[in-house]
Image 1 (cartoon, helix red, strand yellow):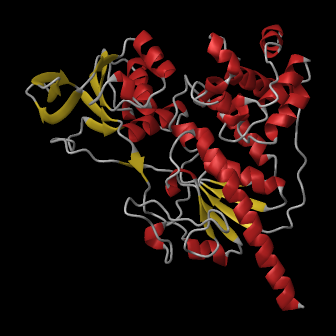
Image 2: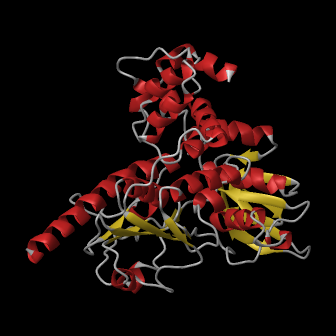
Image 3: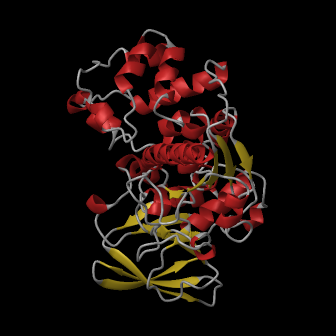
Amino acid sequence: MAEAIAEAKRCLHCKVPQCKKGCPVGNDIPDWIHELSMGNLGNAMSIINAKSNLPAVCGRVCAHERQCEGHCVLGKKGSHINIGRLEQFVADFDTQMHLSRQPIVQKDRGRVAVIGSGPAGLTVAGELARGGFDVEIFEMEPQPGGVLTFGIPEYRLPKAIVKSEIEKIRQLGVRFTTDVTIGPDINIDELFARGFDAIFMGTGAGKPRKLPIEGVHYEGVRQAIHFLRRVGLYREGLIGRDEVPISEGDVVYIVGCGNTAMDVSRTVLRFGASKATIVYHNTIEHMTALRAEYDDAVAEGVQFLWNTSLTTIKPNDEGAYDVTIVEEGETKTVKANKVILAVGSGPASRIVSTTHGIEVDEKGYVLTRELPYGMTTRKGVFAGGDVSGNQATVVHAMSNAREVAAGIAAYVDALNLMKSIDLA
């Protein structure tokens, strides 16, 4: 507490706060930091809650160095305010002390189905529930949270934190239905038949991109998102250790150099791999990963091959693989037990392929309109976050989802108005 308050007192409370401009959700950062500096944690939490549905998550996994902290004027002197750590502190304290519990408002404004319980789905559900909507979330996994539960490693985002944030959404009156895949199990038409006024698609981008690498079909080659999902299922006690595809002593090569590649590399070492090497076709200056994530990976022993491409994967007589790489123009063969591809992903087509009227672009992303914001080409169906091409970070998905929630509210209000006119 003393350290947090001391750090908060360093804030200049700028009249034109650059930190707020750097925040995708426009968090009123100087205001809640000022409240924290005076020990008013309840007030600080109320200010944060006005803009963020997942503060304990954002405080841990946001790209602070590129967003709020990167815009802090004190950063020019090399000592920006540690905004992420302060947000994490306030949110955790609020949870532990049960400081703020928002009242459940009457749910008489309309019914909304939310597909997916990742950052976008949780944000839409929270925003609409506070606004008087009856919201039900449908999740294909056995537990809610999406990428927060099954995509981000425990060391970066403890699952107890995710569960506490989800519980706050639940306490707003939001219902969760798990182990249901919209499309194969229930389609969009059936959801409307159940009486929902609007539907939000927040299904993320769970379909891995393909690379022109010979041998990617072999058992020892895995996709990053599938690997991290396996790790998440294991951490939650839903599968056994033998179902996580990393064995003690494995030599692992990871293709890609974003934050997901850093997550994979550090995770395989935690699961007993003897060596984790990231292969990247460009230089360190062009990597998409945060520098802080790279520094942490290096500190844990992850190795890097710059200006290098992986071209061929072939089984060898040792029960492993011979991997061909081209490093700085020179072709080499290295030995590997596993190769994991962390080169991005796109949207799955489970919902689009089972529903008439939802159009997508050439890459499979759902097309949406400006008015009402976020509505697809199918009336009453909205989309946001990764599935609509707004791929970036957790907080970017939340920012987009808040706008879509406003669009859904406007649409349902107009629908109710038309119904009342017809009845009159």
